[in-house]
Length: 405
Ligand SMILES: NC(=O)c1ccc[n+]([C@@H]2O[C@H](COP(=O)([O-])OP(=O)(O)OC[C@H]3O[C@@H](n4cnc5c(N)ncnc54)[C@H](O)[C@@H]3O)[C@@H](O)[C@H]2O)c1
Ligand SMILES: [Zn+2]
Image 1 (cartoon, rainbow, N blue to C red):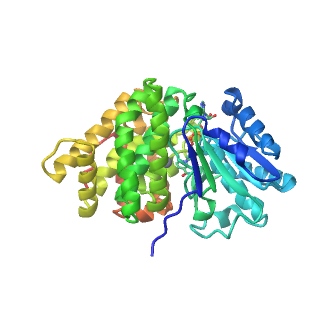
Image 2: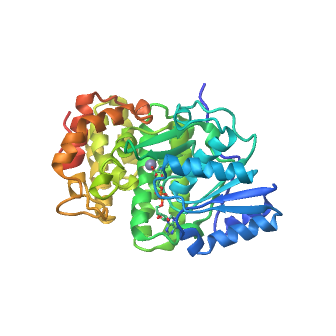
Image 3: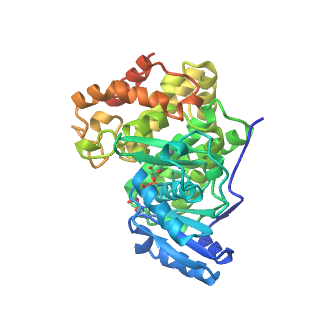
């Protein structure tokens, strides 16, 4: 038996933020990030809609990008004090993910972060509050997913919390919020969404329901992302739906080792001055992982299907996979994303000398590879890498060398 879970309600289209006016409850806590939602007026609008619905509203502001365990614990304490019956998380993946984890701790104050990370091991939520997610970036699709990614900065590791209990009750996918994204964010979150759909399609947990969503999302992203990046607002709006479809797919089909590697490399070089931003990491690693996974016959056929669906050239499966890899690398070029860690600058743009020194990378490689294999996303990858293979794969992602094993 397989399970397919989505939010009970999804409001979409321009102006759908107004759906908040219809919410029923007593107290709503709105969780937001560093200020973009306030700056562009969306936060004030959300507050006034909820007040119009007769609710007392409290804000929890300042959730940082790539939120920490400490932020989750602080937010949960604020919830325990205010006792909301609605948690409204608004912004990019970071504040929404943090709010999901706060929600768990709010419902079960005794829970530790370790307890939360037991895959599909959460107790029943919704005894105290329901959860609405309003996304302002077009990538993570956390507004519809069963995941939350929290960073343990002491270990420099991102941990996915995974359980259908944290799939939001309501998602609001209003493209107005995505229109204010700066270009770099469009590029990174868009390639994150592309990675979600490709990984979901080849995941060992794929099914007819997730395949339909993944393929359609891939084609939309192929058509819309680069134009959206270059300022076409109709395509920007369309990308907001595309990433959400990708999310519906991967929330149920799960992901693969592109994400395992992104989670374990994202924060681990922070002491050298930067993060490898999630979407950029995915964009760099995806072509390498396709080449690695394609040694598995079923995965190879599926990549071929993706290439066909995208209308790419190739008579044989091998040629199709080659075209797919070339196409994705071309997207990275069009979006100004580097091809490998060695050329990943501290500002995330391509650089002659990246911010991660070779010696540091090589020294940390065994540990990173070990952690990536242990990541929750590895289990559904079509090919299970050994420690040696994962190290080789990560080296290809560092140097941009060919994957031939
Ligand atoms: N839960 C999931 O299923 C899932 C999936 C993939 C990634 N993630 C996680 O999500 C996080 C990344 O989220 P993200 O890529 O959405 O970015 P983010 O939430 O970290 O935001 C990045 C920056 O963009 C700003 N911003 C957000 N929306 C904006 C807008 N509309 N206009 C202007 N500025 C805006 C924010 O203030 C912030 O400074 C990572 O921690 C990643 O690991 C989660
Ligand atoms: Zn992702």
